[in-house]
Image (cartoon, rainbow, N blue to C red):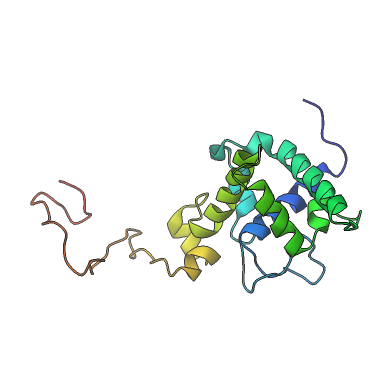
Length: 189
């Protein structure tokens, strides 16, 4: 494996942040934030931990991220050339695209006929998962820390002992009788 060129880590981070922000947009962290386009109010996938989730080896794509970043930036260069857009050399090509251009490119990459679709679907899926389920974190800890996606969805907090109990049935009625050997924790004794 070849060593990464200088600036590769910053390129990787900015490009993956921009991709995740295209999937679940959020507001800029600062006025000079280039990765997050600021297309939506509140926190998005990046603040929800998309990069932490992508770095988790359980995803199975962590080792491929440098190559995916390279491919994404190649597609961004080609997209810009096709549309006559000039890219700022201060940031990676995908980051240099505006939000509308990023969205159009990602739509193209996710198209059922695109030969690399599976890769881009995985990146999009994990960006959504970071926001929708905090899959890379223990749910109780994520809620205690105010995870933006779980909070926005109104995900219930656990009881004081860390367990979730739901005194009201979601369908308005019990779906089955409680087994007679069920103990207080909800497990069978």
